[in-house]
Image (cartoon, rainbow, N blue to C red):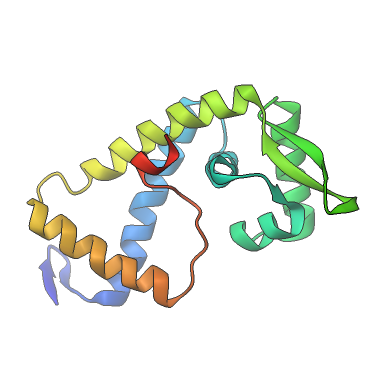
Length: 154
């Protein structure tokens, strides 16, 4: 356990509180780009590739109606587009538009810088150890790829 201003902090509290911290950074970046935090998450997921609606719902953890509303709003803003699914004529895939791709590039870069700044006081060994431990948590729980490493999206 690590000593903190409000007492010892264990694994559960550290993970939960770090989630709040990263979400706050994400939300601040999104506001500066004129999008919602959820739109930022959608765009970052779509950086890797287009997805079908059911895949997106699973990745983002959204019910069908919530996802439909998110995609509708993002489409109205010119950030995403629905394309026919080449494997299923009844389905669509959601992809970034050119405008969405440009926006998410800048949004992703800025958000990465801000998240990295959270560990500015760490030396490289501490950063590597933190990445390895959190990487294990992510891998062990089969978390889908919802955010690429900065060098992966170029």
